[in-house]
Amino acid sequence: MARSTPEINGGSLADIAFLLLIFFLVTTTMNVDTGLARMLPPMPEDKQQDKEQDVKQRNIFTVLINKSDRLLVEGMPLEVNMLRAKAKEFIVNPNDEANLPEKKATEIEFFGTVRVAQGVISLQNDRGTSYRMYMLVQNELVAAYNELRDELATTKFGKQYSNLQEDQQKAIQKIYPQRISEAEPKSVGGHK
Image (cartoon, rainbow, N blue to C red; front, side, top):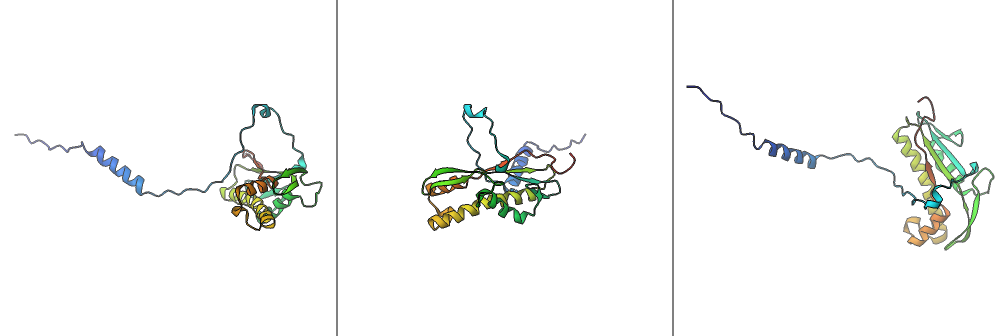
């Protein structure tokens, strides 16, 4: 008499594997990297898409980060902790200097006619730039705009910018519009 080997019932193995998968998906925590809060401008109308904008060099504040995480601002080496003050000076152009952005008279609610600087901050980083350095530079540039908006809100309305009504915030945004242009990363500080 030949002995038969008992078979293992494999019908429920798929169910068990599925339950284990669900269990690990539910119980596993994932690190979520912080991102940049950016609102993209609306798409230009068809008529405007073909028209190139000619920007004068004095209206561009160039910030470069090389692969060694070194900062070059307007062609000069600069430490990250000094970037915010430099950016604020560019954005405001308090003394109407010829090497800083031009100003255009604009009618703004709550403020009347205001001369608004036409400057754009151009950020370019190298492919080898660390994410940490990139975020530090982004934070400093955004902080420059935030500080200027807070200072103006406190002076005009006696409150911080974040505590203002929406129409008051929009008026301040017109005086200090956040113009940060970011180019595609390339090799700005060395070999490819």
